[in-house]
Every structure is written in structure tokens, then in C-alpha cells.
Image (tube, helix red, strand yellow):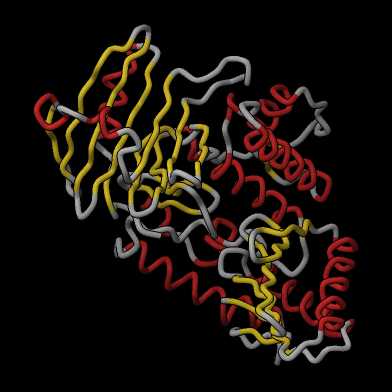
Amino acid sequence: MKTTLRAANLSEKQIEEIYTVLSLICKQEKLQLEERGDRVVIEICPQGNMECVQEGSHLVIEAHTSHGGPGFHAYCVNLLEWIDEECEAECVVSDDCGFVEHPDFQRLKYEVFYPWLSDLKRLLLEDALDHRNYYFDSSHYLVAKQDDVIITPCGFIDRHEFEQMDVEQLAPYFFLWNEEERDAQFYKNCALHLLAKEGYGRYARMNEHSEKYASMIVDYIEAAYAKDPLLPLPLQPYHELCTLLGRDEAIGEGVMMDEEVSQYRHQEVYHLFHEWSIYAPGCCERSYDAVHDVLYLMAPYADASWGWEWMWQISSHALEPSKWEGMEEEGERWQNDTVFGIVRTSVQEDLTLLQAVLSAEERLYIEIVVREASDLPYLKACIQKCGRHLLQG
């Protein structure tokens, strides 16, 4: 589902006016607006961004709303209509759910979004979406599939329990913004989603990225509590994060939720690099060198002063060809469902270098610098679970 504002044949003055109105509305609504490459992105909620793209005299503002839910869709339509009302330029606001023509939220929820979720449930029970990203709006990783468990945007659900749940019960697991207003459940859903997707646990203070999401999780839990003090909340991770962040707790006597809180990064995941899926701990620190097209994954650490115990360097080409000489003769061979692999180990002063070449239609080169030899068996096992096109978005 999506909603769009289009404006064509704009003068420079009209384009400037739209950007000014957009900026003022975002300021009033307390929305974060930033330039990212060739577009302007408005962050509205987790799983819910709006993007503005200009091509010459044409401008499009668009939001894909399936992951956000009916409340997000309605909010985006209202926001785009607000922009249209404030601008002199001729704009056209549309959506593929009929909400622009018939702004009936109950119809939007029960006749558009819930049937979509019912279809998604059927596909999941048929295992038709295995190895596909149906649960995040965007991500650098995908969750490793487990037997008898369904992956949702807000955590795992037991498959048998999932089968018994109706669409109304499933909606909070899949739609963060399921009601028209941002109620307590909305803020709880946002917290559960970020815990599932971006919860680093004891590594919350590893870097700016992990610390940012830890703070957002705490903020959302406290906002949910402020709206409804009796709503069961994920208070255990809340207390843990407040301690790690050195933050005073704002919740005195809340209600602890009974369900287990999922944090996908606390286990191995598939980190995505072009057509490759790299099996490694979810809490890895990720860095991408766009100039040389190299992905780095560093072992997680609890404090920035500690540093990593091992580091992956992943590339689709051999950066230093001489390093790979003799690999065919010296390496240990293996294969899985999607690739053939060769791996070898060499000791270099106080470090060990683990090298692997994965072959399918193309080659992938992996180097892992390891400080402790005791980590080698685990890292070798991770390499052997890497694949090509194993997971598809």
C-alpha cells in the first residue's frame, strides 16, 4: 500500500515553496527531515518513512505504508493533503487504498489492511515466503529462519499459536500503527519492533548507532507508560537499557508483559552484501567502504574502549591478489546448498588470518582477522553457512 503527492511543471519558486511548507509541517509535527543522496526523507515512525524526490520540474512525495499499518497510511494521506492545501502549486494526492476518496478509517483498517494481513498469514503458513523479507521496511540483515517459529516485525511467534490467532490478534505484531491515533499500544509496538530489529542488549553502548536505538526504545516504553500505566510493557529490557545508558528510570510501578521479548540481533543473522548472505552474529558492528566496495563486520563489544576480537573483510574481488596465492592447493574444501567454498588458516605474529573463497555464479572473498585462536571453529562454521541468494528481500 502507498500514498503519493505529485506535482508537475513547477517553477523554481513553487519547488522552493513546497520544500519550505514541508519543512515547517515537519517542525510542527516534530518529524525528522534529512537529505539522503538524491532524496529528502521524513522519518515518521519505525517502519514508516516518507520520501521526497525531485526530477527537474517534477516532484513526488511518497510513502509505502504496508509495514506501518492503517494508522500510518491515514496519517500520511492527511499530511500530504495538508501540504497540498498550504501550497499554491497544483498538486495531486492519491493512494491505492481509496482513503483519499473515502476517508473512512474503519473501512481502511478492516477492508484493506486486514485482508492483506490475512493473505500474508496464509502465505506464511504455506512457507511461501521463506528467506524473504516481509517483516522489515528496510534492513542490512535478515533473520535466520527457525523451525516452528514465525518471524514478525515485533518478534517471534510460535507457529502453532500463530495458526490459532485471528487477524485482529495478529495486527499488533505486524502493524505498528494500527489505530487512528498514536495510543499506548502504538508506542509499545514501536518499542517491541526496535527491540526485535535493533536491540543490542549489553552492547547498547558499542557505538552511536546502537546507543541511538537503545535511547529510542527507552523513549517509546516511557511514552507507552505515560499513555496507559496499566498496559503490560517490556520492562526487563527497559531496566537493563536504563542502567547501561546511565539514565534515570521514569517508570516506577509498571506492569511487566508475560510474553518473551525477541531481540533478533542476539543470535546469528544473515548480513546482506550484494547477492550474498553473510552468516554472523547480529550484534556485529557494520561498516561499508563504498570506494572499494568492501563490507566490514567487527565482533561486538560492550564499550568503545575495548575494541573487537575479530573482524571480517568481505569483498567481491581480491583487493590484494598476492594474499590469495596457493589457496586452491592449501585450502580445505566444502559446499552447502548454494556455494562451493575453500577456507584456510594462517598465523601472522599475534593474529590468525582466516581466508575463504565462496564460488557460485561469481566469487566472494572473505578475510577474518582473529585475535583468539579459540574463536576459529565458530568463525569457520559461520563461513560455511554463508550463501548466495540464500535470502531474498
